[in-house]
Length: 283
Length: 87
Image 1 (cartoon, rainbow over the protein chains, first blue to last red):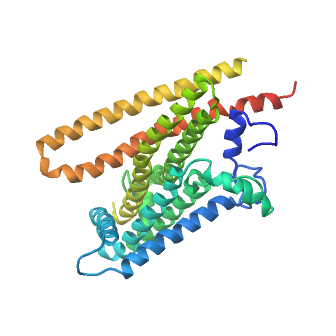
Image 2: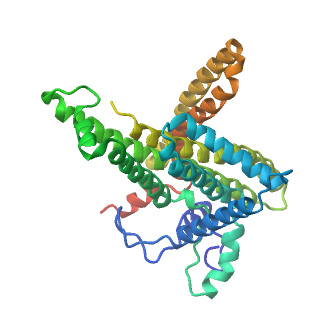
C-alpha cells in the first residue's frame, strides 16, 4: 500500500502497518496531545458491542430453559463471580469489583479478538475509505496492541486500588501501612518500607499494561510476517511453496492465538482482582 | 554491514534464550501440576485456572521478546539511527 507503481518492501510494509492513525505525529516519548484515533474508535466500538450483547442477554434472561446465548453468558458470569469470590473477600466491594472484572474480561477479549481478522482486511478497506474522507492511510485495528490503551487500563486499575486502600483502611491507616509494611513498624525502616511500596505499585502497574501490550503486539507482528509470505506469492515453484506455507503458518498461528487472546484477557482480569484484593489486606 | 549482522545475531539470541527460559518454566510448572493433580484429583479444576494464569505470566516475557526481536529483524531501527549519525 505504498506509492503507486511500486510494491513496498517487507520493511516498508511492516513500518506502514505499525503506524497509528494519529491527529498529529508523535515527537516526544510522552505526549498527551497525540490521539491514536484508530485505537479510540475500535476500543469504543468494541466496548459498546460487548455491553450491548451482555445487556441483551440480561434482558432476555428467563428462569426457564435458557437459550444457548444465555447459557454462555451465565457460564461467563459464574466463572468471573467465583474467581472474584475467591480473591476479594468483602461482599460490599464485590458489588463493584466483580462487574468490573467481567467488563475488563469481555472488553479485552473483544479487543484482542480483532487480531484474528485477516491482518490486511480492515486496513485495505481503510485504504479506499480513509483518503476519501480526507484522513491519512494508516489503520491499526487491534487496540490492545497500542501501549496507550493497555497502560490506560492498568492505570485505571491502579486508581481503583488506591481508592480501595483509602476506603478500607482509612487515609491514616493507609499512610501508616505505606511506611510500616513490609519490614515492620520501626522508625529507621520507614524510608526503606516506603521505597519498597512505591516500587511495588510502579512495577505492578507497568508490568500489568506491558504484558498485554507485548503479547498482542508480538502476535500482530507475527501475523504481518505470515502475510508477507503470501505477499511473495508468484507463479514459480518456490513462490507457490511460500503461498502454501502462508496458509499453513497462518492457520497454525491463528489457532494458537485463540489461546493467547483468551489467556491474556483472563490474566488481566485475574490480576485486576488480585490487586484489588491486595488493597483489602492489612498488614 | 556490521550492524545488520549483529542485529541478526541479537534477534536470534533474544528468541532462543527467551524460549529456553519459558520452556523450562512451563515444563516445571506442568510437571508439578500433573503431580499435584495425581495426588489430589479433586483440586484439579482449581489448580487448572491457576496453572493457566501462570502460563500466561511465564509466556509473556518470551512473547514480548519475540515481538521485539521480529521487529528488529524486519524493520531494523538501528539502521535508521546509523543513517542519521553525523559523518
